[in-house]
Image (tube, rainbow, N blue to C red):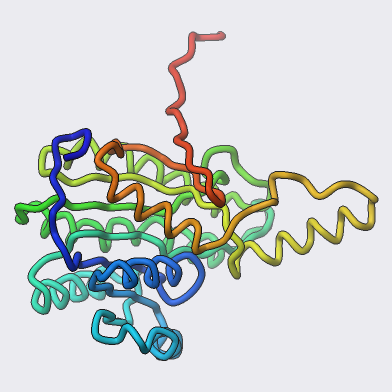
Amino acid sequence: MNASGRVFVLADRIVLITGGTRGIGFALAKAFLSAGDQVIITSMTAESIEQAEADLFQSKNHLWAKRCDVRDRKDCQQLVQDIVAKFGRIDILINNAGICSDGQFYKMSEDNWDQVTDTNINSLYNLTQPVVQQMMKQPESGFIYSMTSTAGMYGVFGQTNYSASKAAVIGFTYALAEEVKRFNIQVNAISPAAKTDMTIPAIKRVEEACARNGEPFPDYWRIGSSEQVATRVIQLIDSPKTPTGTVFGINGEQVWNYHRPERSEYVI
């Protein structure tokens, strides 16, 4: 039993992971499969689905790879219907799909803004709402974890679209957790630090800049692996002490929680 009184006793959990064909999503898929769970992964392209199926061939009996555009409301609704028709329930949703398209705001194109916000924000509504509607009917606990970033907490130069989208994940998590805790649904966010296709180019640029300037490599960029993130996410879900409505940071073996901002006094 966890802090909200939820009891999770299911074996063979039904786990839905968006963007599950690479990076952290793929590591999560492997970790849940190793735990004996039934895992559904999604991607926008058939090519990435085929590659993931090939890479996870040994777990094919517990893997269902589905093409789904999380920006498309009808796609998401159909995905949830298909999962429930096949398995009868959804126990865990990991909102992992996300992109970045960087550029300074004053010259950012409308397309760059829309691509990031549609994928990182609108997908939360498109997929999470039908999943919540299903979880509300189930007697067992439900778990919804969404990927955010420190960019959403502090802002990053050249990433106004990405920072805005990841800040939205945090607000979404806080609000939804309050709404659905009475239905035994836990809602949390993860701010991961891991070497992925998205972060490796940035790390390389920092390494090159440090080498040119004779400066030490900053601790901020000393980050762990996707596999370590996946392990910690499963531990958070499995732990009876994990609270709902929390943003967790994960880097390597370290896990911490971010405190919500305190209300301040007026300064003017």
